[in-house]
Picture 1 (cartoon, helix red, strand yellow):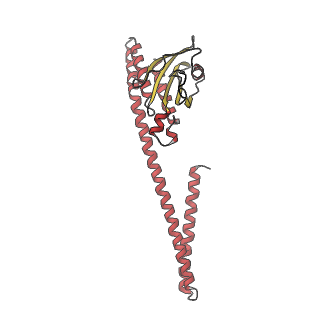
Picture 2 (cartoon, rainbow, N blue to C red; picture 1 turned 135 degrees about the horizontal axis):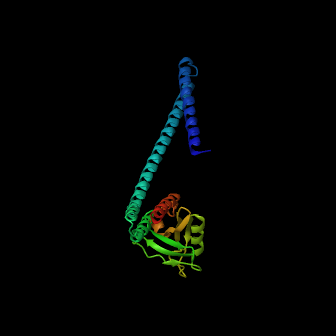
Picture 3 (cartoon, rainbow, N blue to C red; picture 1 turned 90 degrees about the vertical axis):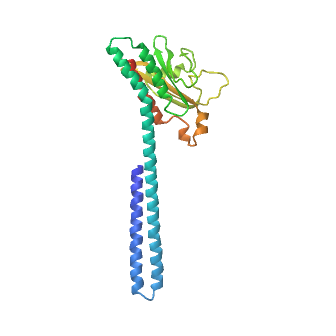
Length: 260
């Protein structure tokens, strides 16, 4: 049963009880006026059913206020997420437009592509609080991933991840299968496997692919202790489905620019 179906059942039930109790109050008031022997009894029954009618109405009004508040909160969250995504996409779309202009003029777009790598990595770092973004190109011949762009306001990720390196299996699986990698409470592959460091990172990795050609991976990571100090809700202390969708949009944007 869906939430909408449950809500309709509850609304229908409340309306039914309101009708029954309201009708009962009317009947008892009528009987109290026509039957003097049981007048007090019927008056008490009428008062009780009137009170129940008022109580049902109060419950229904409270539910309506709660639903209204939830809808307003959802609208605010949706608007905030859309604004953040549009703000994050703006630098990348600007550089994609620059790439198109350079290619049309038959120039060398490598400089603008480098700026696009950087812009999209920086945009990826804004999908959640205190996270870091990085784009790694993939060389299928050597199965090596090389960092081409990163968010500048955070520590530099490892420059290369190749055969035998920490995380190569996960990155290779993402780039070859297209599956999204998302994990919380782990060591980030982009910090390197430093002995003694705690497994307190959250990581998301998605594939960057132009057509049928995988180009690399776009990734974000963060220290979860920075989220636990900032957010009280458990679902805010990890990368959400919405964050993954935002990262996939950025990966498609990057692929469109690199494939030109």
